[in-house]
Length: 525
Image (cartoon, rainbow, N blue to C red):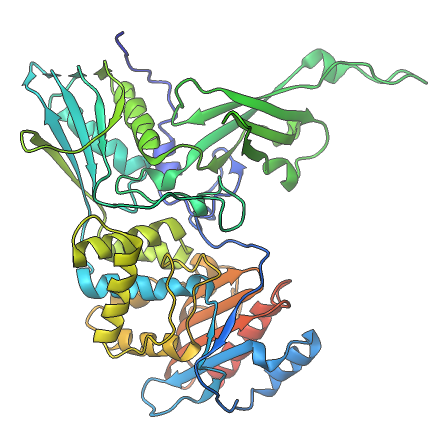
């Protein structure tokens, strides 16, 4: 059966999704400044772990910090601090700095540092297109192979350009299948819900050598109001017996073939609340996707992003939609396979450089992209396929080679989205000190968030003299807050700062206020 294109697809997604990070619901057409926080920092309800490397006498904290700890009833044993002038021989403040703690997303500093050190800021990922069979008159009489090498940022716009280039080179019709070659990475069976039970959240998405748009499917919610029901008013002394207010249409993009969802969304009256923008996704016993919750008619048209497809299915769906939008013809379906020695290389797409990509990773704390870095580094350093174990070993070997103590460090997936990840504040400080003296220091520092300016710190110190005076990476889980990076203080000293807080009273802004107090003290030294 011949499949032809449809120009009515949501091609506006290309720009809308260019840097999706915290996948929050937003009005269609609204600014996406908050979207890049990913696949990013997440919360889960388990307590953090703390381990001791050796005993250390705690130093006296600044009075402003002690007052907050007393106010919030937080013991000093739950806090680790390391503050050092890069031109000094010893830290100016060091508290519990040798305790191994859960670092949350500040762990990304290790992964991005090691990858920069080993691959360099100009490293670029390839995505290859191969043909199995001859091309005549724009018709491929055979299969088309898409081979990935772990590009973390193969988003809508970039993948659309790849597909369009195939059309620009004269390819019009594919008489075979689309073969997905993910062999550059090798992953064990992955349970996306293992971390916090939220299997469809983007930050829990499965890694893949050919990963499209962080694994995010865009679900468009469109209320279809029953006009007769909405106009019907209650009669005196009688209840309104209208059937329903209407229904909510759900449209996925990329389009999912045979999309069969149990749509249990209820259209309700009243103002649009945040709770209306958080529908529940789950699969029933037969594997059918169930979407439930309430959705206010006043919310109008909105979208939400979730990871619901396998990586190979997701990238195929996107390729098919883009190909048809560009008036291409596809006669086959999707298969998983590999490039063979007889295949012909037709096109190579190059990603944004590593230096560009770590700005997205660290500023917006993108977990999915970070895991791609770890797997890539493992494959490049120890040979393909890339695995988690190879990636972890590559990072630790890089740290050791640069005289950074790795005793007790647990990397897990390299993103910090783990309760088993561990590092000390002193080790984090040592990493920052080493990175500052490396040739790629400008790229590394520029990847960190500027308080009050961008990234995860855009809303802190916005109208404050500390605005823009630091380059920092944040980390947040339930019972964990952390922040690490560099500061240029009032006296012109360049400081390294690492703060870790594990415990039950980190939430409700308490952890951030303690961090702010330490940052303010450091600024005045």
